[in-house]
Amino acid sequence: MTKQILLSTPHMGELEQKFVQEAFDTNWIAPVGPHVDAFEREFCDVVGSSHAAALSSGTAALHLALQLIGVSAGDEVFCSTLTFIATASPISYLGAKPVFIDSDRTSWNMNPELLREALDKRAKLGKLPKAVVIVHLYGQSCDIDPILAVCNDYEIPLIEDAAESLGASYKGRSPGSFGKIGIFSFNGNKIITTSGGGMLVSDDQKLVEKARFLATQARDPAPHYQHSEIGYNYRLSNVLAGIGRGQLCVLGDRVEARRRNFDFYKQALGNLPGIEFMPEAAFGKSTRWLSCLTIDPAAFGANREEVRLALAEEKIEARPVWKPLHLQPVFADCECIDGAVAEELFENGLCLPSGSNLTDEDLGRVTSAIAKIHKEHG
Image (spheres, rainbow, N blue to C red):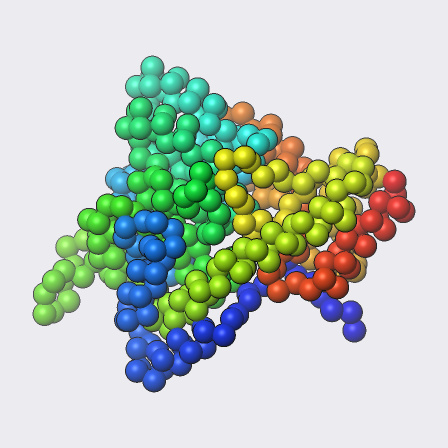
């Protein structure tokens, strides 16, 4: 039987089971507990933020982040368009409306010049958004400095969706540590995983304390169950936090393994006509969470979808680059500032298998299959 090569699978180390066993041995199974506290501290040490709240998902972290800075019904929130829907869904949870911003070609992330132009125009109209949400895509940071500068000019809170970029850097610092609030994801396909989970980080202690309060059903300090606000069941369990602690210990190894995948692909496929790999911007270091490339069908001989389907025939999972959110039916009535770059990347972009546990044989199967497609169609 030919082995299936999946896009990005969990990669466990040696410490995760030790921490989980400790949770069982002490009967700390429920949400919160010593592993949660330790995971938050250790995570802060890694990303350089002062405070963190471990939560049930990255989406939950974004939901709380938006609520914490006061986003409510009728507000607008500027948001990257080239991303997974979980970046924008929490905006809708609160009754607000996303306004999408196109990507630049340098990083595939939000275009800082488009953002400034849009905010300058909105300022003249007296219609500034309540917040800006940027995404650090596929393991690569946005160009944060100009984005943060214009947000500061207009006193607009910046939220960083760093779900895909734990372990990356921007001018020597971790994405997610620059804005008012940063969020991370530990979903099963991420660079490290707790099976499901997320983290909210900030240098504002009161914001993080409020996040923890809201995430535990907003229970007032009383001997009985009393609630003065509506809260959520968003806290991470002590068991999953134990997995996270073990995964955090090997983060550097996981980053290097994924960068090695990318280097393997680029060396094997970089000279094929029509193939261009996602660039690494000069301002930082990407984790290469997913190895992404674009395919010019005229030069390569087959388009992105034909390549994806041919790989599937070989039991190799590949996926298109995110479909821009302004093209999603659920956001059909939302404004988008430009969008042509994101649309082109979606049309031609493909994500290759990128797990940190891939072997040379796995990578060789992928590159051989793509070279074969070109040979047959080019």
